Image (cartoon, rainbow, N blue to C red; front, side):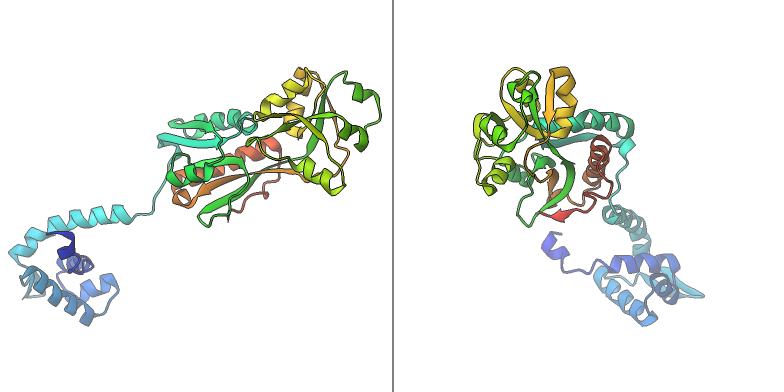
Length: 316
């Protein structure tokens, strides 16, 4: 029987047949399924027509199954067991999980989160592997086609089929090499803008939040170097006279080993915020939901952000 022929049958009747064969009584079967006795009688009539067999015949104290019904019963048990498994709510057991989760992220996010994340995976889901892939400008397409499960550290998209959750928040800090001539003078906006600056740009286009804030003040700066590698920038600053305005977390992490000096930006800047973004195709997947919660927990422990920040996922 092909699917078009199968669609002509009301497969809900199989549930009624199962109850009837177990109870061998129309009223008791109706009680089991929470329907009326007339409704169960109508179901039995339709079942007899479907199988072209009486299925149950009257007997003392109830009803007796026909030979056809006895033949159907074990098949019916197996089919309904499979259907129960099919419609059972999906479960995810981290300790037994296997597979790969693919995350696209810039290097600074990888540096910030991955060490603690791999430790957490080894403890809670040792069979689940993590693959970090290069962040690229077409991350929306990669989420949509399933080549990545999640992206972190990107702006949220504006498509209706994307979800976003704030993950990381950090203040800005200016980074210069120890011994930089600017450190011997008063740190002012005028001297800040007169320096040669380094800008992290993953796309290679435009400026950044610092440039937006300067433009509001009628100021500008010279961007002498653009690089797409956030985690490398403090190391480059350590060997040049460039100034970098970056996340306080990264600057604090590398200031000592790289010999860096930190200064507060001489202008007001909004916090650096990074979100994780995922596609609707994985929004309800139990494994991906668990993994997103794990990343949020790791980010909170690493950055010290409040637990309430970013708890709510919204459409991007």
